[in-house]
Length: 157
Image 1 (cartoon, rainbow, N blue to C red):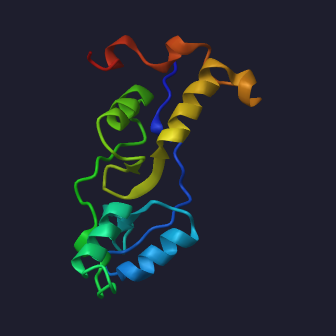
Image 2 (spheres, rainbow, N blue to C red; image 1 turned 90 degrees about the vertical axis):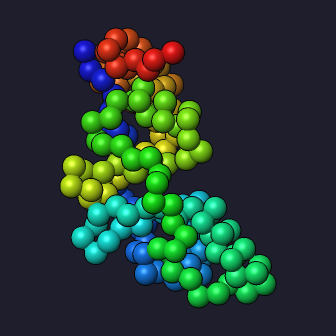
């Protein structure tokens, strides 16, 4: 039985920030690329957190709302965001999305290196491709919905 994992649908061409990036520059970068958030990494590509629209709003509030004070991304990034591994099964990813406000989850290697991101939309698309590959015109490597997870991987209800 084949299980869909994060590796099967993660995006690995990423726009990233460093903790020393100025928040104003980061906001402009997010807007230019139509992003609501971006992962923050160190010089070696290790994941440190995420700068979200919420973090940007915090920087605006901290500045009094009139003019954005010079603030580094590291001061307003979310360091507690949920992360997953490339081997995380789709059922566990769906469970994480259900219980967090995040639209994206960082995919990390064992050493903390950022490998990619999975989105709610891409996760749902991967499942739909499995259920009905004709709908997207792509042939599914999975036979049917039972291939989504092994019984022991099903989330507790």
